[in-house]
Image (tube, rainbow, N blue to C red; front, side, top):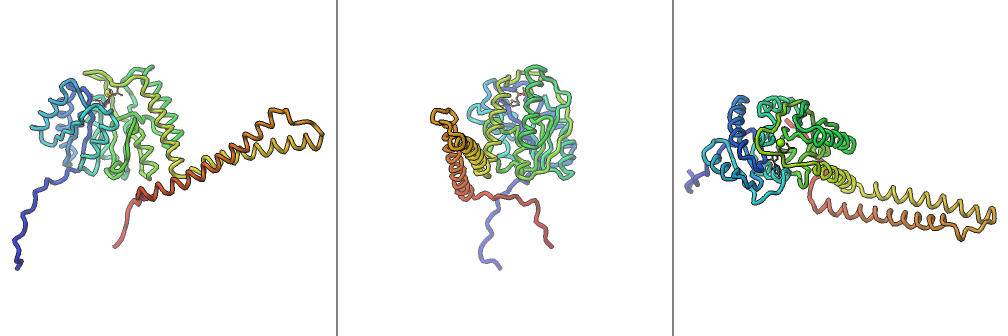
Length: 328
Ligand code: UDP
Ligand code: MG
């Protein structure tokens, strides 16, 4: 017999299977409709769920309304941020507080249709890690929104190697482990498919519905496209730099050295082969610049490589991801 009385165990609520995550910034009219729509559609999937609404520093009464709703609505969890941080940090906060195996993100303004959630779930369960929505008939302004995002999608696809029609669609489904330890900032939430792909995730996209905004107004203008593109450049650069800095700088350095040598040889032949005076030629300066730049870039690549090696070791982050481990 056990001589010690057993300690009372702490009752823990079972974890839901699905976490629906919506960032909220001044969406007071849409909020109750969103909560209602999710409460209606999720039970039809036969899975347990939670709805996580992240209030991103609203000032229109959304915060108070959300607090009230969360107190009386089952399955609803409110995460209230201290101020307005932006959609990406709000989503990251949602991921942090979500407990499901599958996360679904969508906009709170009901431009995404919660009725598409069952299809996203079915698709992800066919063996994907991330399913991205594609607003085939997008209900936004053609000139300020559709055209810039068409261009942005094309560039993102080219740079990342993951061709999606609609990176900007918030309605997506993710396996929790795919987003669990991503460091998000800026506008990076929209690059999640590309970031996940780098980590070895299986990705697909499906057409989803899209509605015009009913209440409130869009939080974005044309400026976002530029911020997105700048973030994209950073992502590309970081991806290259964090893995093999020597491959970028080393090759640029070698190219510069090579051109410098070629021009140097050309000038040497002119001087000694043809007896020309090369002392006053601007080309001579170019040779010197190319040679020096080449050496510097090469050394910069080497330094970067050393730096990154130390960085990776200090991060303690695996440099590979295991999809499954199978044993008897
Ligand atoms: N949003 C947010 N923080 C912000 C800006 C937007 O949480 O700083 C939320 C917003 O409430 C909405 C979603 O992000 O749920 C998408 O915003 P919006 O509908 O304005 O973007 P659009 O549909 O015009 O691209
Ligand atoms: Mg919207």
